[in-house]
Length: 198
Image (cartoon, rainbow, N blue to C red):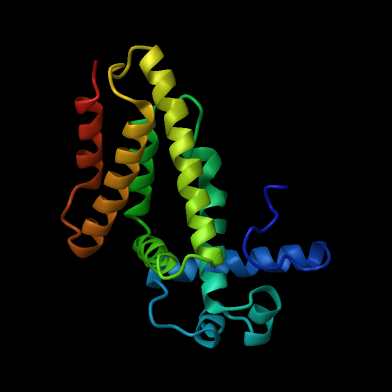
C-alpha cells in the first residue's frame, strides 16, 4: 500500500480525487487541532472546514469515518519526524507527548475515538485502533530491544511488557493533561528513562 493511500474512507477515482481528499483532511486537521470535534455533525464539520456536505459524503460515509481518517492522516503526516531511527523508545514517546500538548483538539479527538472504538467489536474504528496499538507496541519493542543491547536501558525486563506500559502511561497521562493542563507531560514521561536505566 502506498503511504498516501487511505485506510479509512475513499480516496477518489483519479489523482485529482486523491489530492482533494488530502486537502479536506489537511483542513480538518487544522480545525480539529484548534477546536476538537466534540458534538459536531458531518454538516457542521463541512462548514467548519469550508467544503460542502456533499464533498465530505463523497469521500467519507459517516462522521465517525471522517474523524478516524483525520486522526490517521495527522499521524501519518508526522510519522517520519516522530520515529527517527536513532531515537530511543522513551524519546519517541516524550517527543510525541510534547508535540501533542500543542494540539489539544487532536488529543481530545484521539481519546474520543479510542473510547468510541470500545462500543462494538466490529467497526472500522476498532480495527484501526487495534492495528495502531499493534504497530506502536511493535515499534517500541524494536527500539527497546536495541536500547537493551546497547546498554541504554535495563536488560532484565521484557521489552513487550515495557512497551505496553509505556503506551498505557503515555495515553493515560495525556487524558490527565486534558483534564488538568498543569500536569507536566514531558517531565513525567522522562521519568521512564530513569526507571529503565541500567
